[in-house]
Amino acid sequence: MASEVSDELGALHRQMVLIRRFEEAAAKAYSQGKIGGFLHLYIGQEASAVGALAALRETDYVVGTYRDHGIGLAKGMTPRACMAELFGKVTGCSKGLGGSMHYFDADKRMLGGYGIVGGHVPLAAGVAFKAKYKNTGEVTVCFLGDGAVSIGDFHEALSLAALWKLPLVTIVENNEYSMGTPLSRTMSVPDSSQKALAYGMARDRFHAHDVLEVKARVGEAVKRARESSLPTLIEIQTYRYRGHSMSDPGKYRSAEEIEARKKDDCVLRAEAALRAQGRDDAYFAALEAEIEAIVEDAVRFADESAEPGEELIEAYTYA
Ligand SMILES: Cc1ncc(C[n+]2csc(CCOP(=O)(O)OP(=O)(O)O)c2C)c(N)n1
Ligand SMILES: [Mg+2]
Image (cartoon, rainbow, N blue to C red; front, top):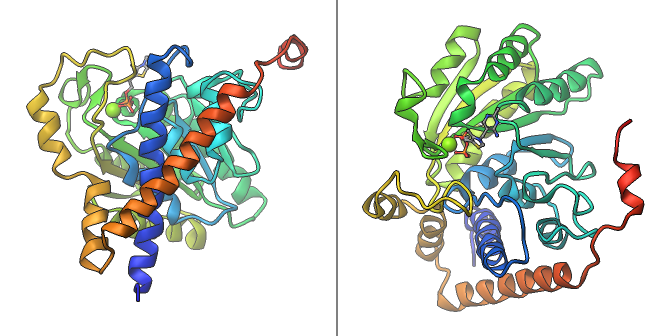
């Protein structure tokens, strides 16, 4: 019989496999010309969103960057609505008007998907401010990339979050690169969590190899936010296997570097732990088949859905 630990790990592993297969299918659809514009894949980083969001309640909020597919799916958005958004279809979560960078689902409390690097951090602080002002006990998690740490918005938001003691957990996903620029060329220190010291804020820093550890460590920050209304800055060290976006030839790093990082793959690590606890080949084969069916259904749904009509032009244009 599976233990409680392996049941929990099994659920988180399943979410990570879903995100990975979903994005592999999205990459294929992109190469077939079914998806236009930008497509930033999260492949390699899955344990970060899955572990972090597992530490939240459904009523807690998440705000993220354009690398948002994993965050959206981990927050409970449907693969259908997420895939249809990539295809620019009216059945997408943002009616096909936003695309890859603009996932949004108010019911699931996934408040975006933003394309301006660092620009969303003050928005997340505002969401946390609302929770404090109304005394709702809700926590807000904000994801950003290592490149956003050098943007002014990040510092303004953290400064006020600390001053006003907001229930905000800010997570820097340090994947070592902003587009083709390594972190060593954008920041004077390698550990972005040190920025918390300037604001008198709690901080933490760890790898995203082990999804249960991510959950536990983010969970401490969530507890601090919920029970003491205090913010935390966390750096999660991670790595993306694919290019910055689909148009990135990736000439700034070697194939050897990528292969070396894949040895710490979060999905394979979770699989190995599950196997050690008794899950067998049949379990993983059934899981892959189940996920394949979900992803195929999402692609079919997106393919068959209609494009947004003219009636939406005025509805979403500000004058
Ligand atoms: C204000 C601003 N400047 C530049 C860009 C162009 N741009 C898009 S993504 C990106 C890199 C950001 O890297 P990072 O924050 O590390 O996130 P990652 O892509 O690695 O997840 C840049 C410079 C932008 N979108 N917004
Ligand atoms: Mg980065």
